[in-house]
Image 1: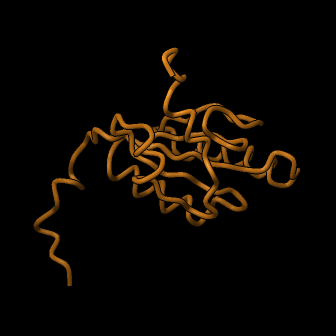
Image 2: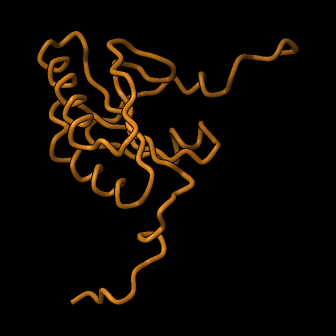
Image 3: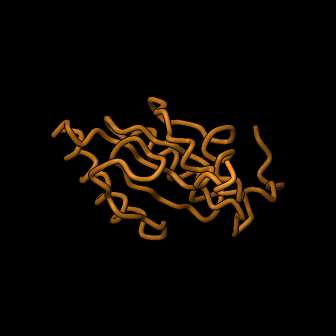
Length: 134
């Protein structure tokens, strides 16, 4: 039996500085996937109003290789609850989960984890434009 009298500060923390981001990927050319992603986006909006839900993109954008939408959580309780919910409810979608530590390349590669299939990212877009002296 686990003691409930002592709770980790990581659980009781009301503000996490890393504000995890979950990018939900789908294949827009597959009609069933696109419809599922649209419905999932709406479910997240309705069922998790306390989270920050971003636009549903119907094409690849930035470093992301396919259509997607993103969701921010703000504390460990939200992160755990939403992560667990996505594991069960993501359908054909794949999810990139990463922190926001201030090092975008490391956040999206070394510190990232995936629910479902891992997608290759356009990592070079995280380095910024090449300098004129290169």
